[in-house]
Length: 140
Image (cartoon, rainbow, N blue to C red; front, side, top):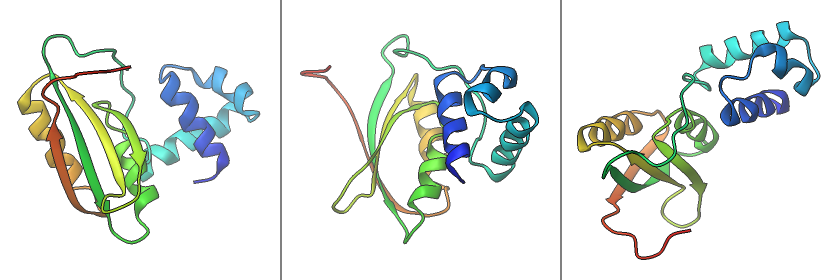
């Protein structure tokens, strides 16, 4: 993945509906180049799909923090895979025992369970620990 790929992903993360005809001039490349890059990123798994970004999940929902330990030098690959999950609100690199912290928000415990199963199956993740957020005392 090079700088053009990262910039393309950044634009798509902000607006996954942005057409190729709008992406090309912003990236300074042809529409064919943008289309080829998107196809390659999809084929490699760096982009897993295009989703709707939501604000707060309606209803009570489930919020959690998942701490993730990564094997060796797999951090970038794991970050790329995790970025494809719309349920992950934020990703943070950190120091200490855990390498990555994921902030998760989903609608139900069943969706939460399914998401954790998918996260644990990502190649390069050696361990994880999840804490459900019960109540907020202070938020931004």
